[in-house]
Image 1: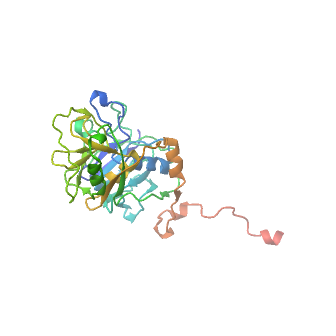
Image 2: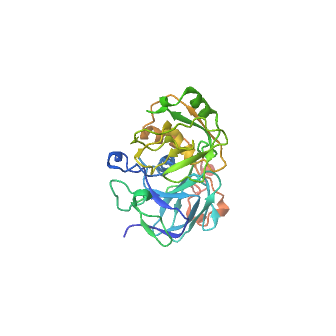
Image 3: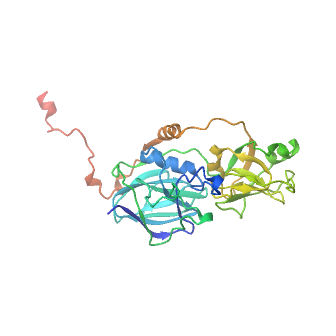
Length: 336
C-alpha cells in the first residue's frame, strides 16, 4: 500500500495544486495551478527534486495533517504558524514527518497563501496532464477533513531538515508590468496616472482575478464599447467599466473584452498574489527580459538552502542520532 497523507482538519479553501495545464487556452481551459508558482519551485529545491510536484495550496489557513509512512514535507509560500506534535517548526523548510506525528498549520503571519508539498508529491490521478484542482471548471474539489491523499515515494525521507532563505515577497511593493497588445490604446497621461497610483488588494479577489483598489482618481479608465473580445491570460491587467483594475489569476477565463493596460511580469506574479489586503502595491512598466529556465531557478534556490539547526532539547529521539563521528578507543595519545 502506498503512503497516504491524512487530513485531520482543513482550512476553508485547501486544494491540490501543481504548475497547472499550460497550452490549453485554445480549448477554453486556462492554466490553473498554484497561484504562487515560485513556492512550488522552492519546495522542489528544498526536497532535492528536479521539478515541482503537486502539493496543497492553503489560502489564509492550513490544517492538521499526518502520514502513514515517513516522508518529508516542504513548507513554502506565505509564512504560517506551524508545529509538529506541538513543537514549533520554521517556515520555508523541509522536515521529516513520521507516522502518527501531527503537523499543524495555522494562519498566515504575512502574505496570503502557503503551500505544503510532500517529498514524493501528491499522487492523485492526473487530469489532462496535471493534478491541479481547477475550481472554475470543476476539475477536482476543495479538500476536506478526513480525506486521504495518495503520496509518491519520497526517496530521501530521512534526509536532515533544511531551511531556505527567501527574498521578501509577502508585503507588496512595486510590480513590473509588460506592455501588451492593447497598451498603446492608453494615452501617455493614462499610463503615468496608473504608474503613479498606489493600490491594495480588494475584497473581490479570488483564483480567477485579483481586484486592485486605489484612492486615486482612475484617470486610466477607458471605455470598452465596440472592443472585440480577445484571448487573455493570467497576469493581464483588465480595466473594468468603472476604472477598477483586475489582475487575471490562475483560473481566469480565456477570452475577455475589457481593455488591458498591460500584463504583470511573470517573475513578479508571486509578489502580487502574496500581497495582503493592507500591503501597498504599485506598477511600473519594464522591458521584457529572458525568464530563467527551471534548472537555473533550482540552482539559484539551492544556493540559499542551509541545514536546519535544532535545539537538542526539542528532539525527542535525540539518542537515535549519531552525534559523534570518528570514535576511538581513547588511548590514542598514550600510543603516540
